Amino acid sequence: MEETRDGLRSAALSRRSALSPAICSSWSGLIQVKAIEFPTYQAARSVALYCAVGNEVETRAIRDHAFQHGKKVFCPKFSGSDSPVFIQLNPDEGPLVGGFGVPEPAGSVRLSPAEGESLVVFVPGVLFDGLGNRLGRGGGWYDRALQRLGNRGVFVGLAYDCQVTDRLPAQAWDQKVHYVITESRVIDCLALRSRLDR
Image 1 (cartoon, helix red, strand yellow):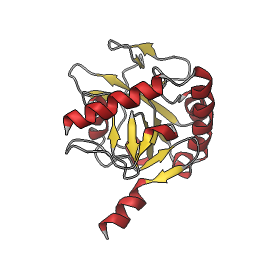
Image 2 (cartoon, helix red, strand yellow):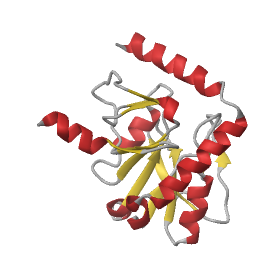
Image 3 (spheres, helix red, strand yellow):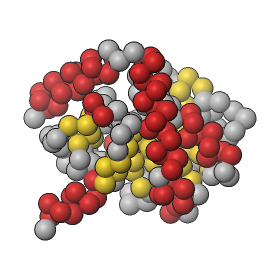
Image 4 (cartoon, helix red, strand yellow):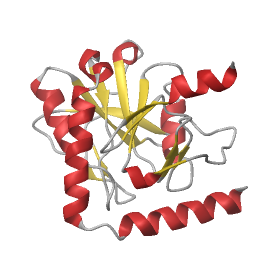
């Protein structure tokens, strides 16, 4: 299965890398508008974001909107171990480049359990399917970040339509998302999983 996942990851990364900056900017804009209009985000008091690298869907418009509307904003950061934590980002401090080339917040204030009760987490991925299965860049980094949250928060994948496939092979440790937002649609993964369970 891992060989299949590696092949899917490699092909998807190649497709995404081939997208032009103009296309990525346009699609990212449409996705972020949908994310900002998404009722779960509107109701959330806290939002966790990733800092896009390469041709990932951008999150800066969501970040700016969250700050303007008094939401707390968190980004993942590596702690002393290999398990990442979500750290609060302040409006006047931009993210710094972390040790792995991924921008991280400079602060040290962690997401508290109470803040997790009204939290939406926007999640990057290489591939998603309609059931909420997610294939990341490898290594399980983001899966561990989501696992630390337990049952707190609503996980929302951000992806281009070309990153959504019919069915992904999943591992036991993979963290599913509840929704996927693309430039053309919002996929309710919980509803699809519920229909299959009947």
